[in-house]
Length: 294
Ligand SMILES: [Zn+2]
Image (cartoon, rainbow, N blue to C red; front, side, top):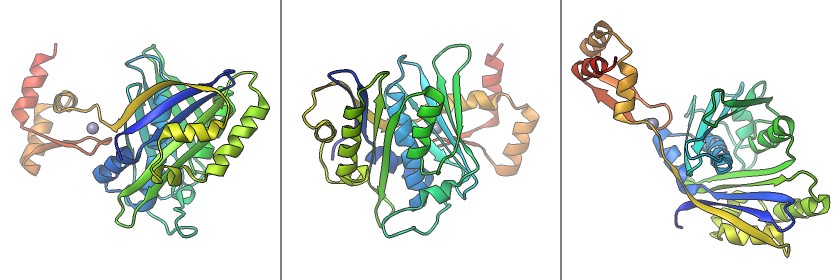
């Protein structure tokens, strides 16, 4: 199957920008780390795929993008982040939340996310203030919510397709996404043609499962129109946490607080929300870390 990756392309007339991503292994790594239910895997996998695609559009090496989805459904919320280098991570607030399927093979992501909530996009571009855009949820199905965000907040007509196929043993069979964005003054005929071609392909998760390359899918979407592939990059689940970094956070606690925890629990443990990695410390190392700070 090979590594997860993403390609970015533009048509010859520069009417549309296209992003295609295969995220099967990345979503499966998320699933293993958070032990998500089938429907939660689909929901988090879709948002993580979207974050990786949008991350590919960041300009600076240190820029990051965060997608936060909050709704009134049982999963309560999902956070996904990605950088410009193809690293992504994500977590749900309630990983075990699940719902029966609406129809065979169709996981009910919309109900798991719920309504009466919002999708927030935060782009940290290394400036004083990050860019923050927020829209209310349309359906909780995530792709529709993102398309609405692009139109409302960034004024960019977009086609968004996101899909995750979950196997019987809960492992991820296939995951991926497509984003097509119209450039200002884009040719409507070409856009309609692309939309039809994407619909003809069927659900993106099924296309990925069939094992074809993203380049092949792009060629099907563009059918006879000239285009150029601008970029190809590997994608992976990768968290930016480290033992040292989380120790720095603990240094904010007093000796008394840390000794209390240590005496009661027999250890001092910190769990990273994003990747579920657990780091264990002795009170002395944290005191030492604190003493290093001015
Ligand atoms: Zn982490």
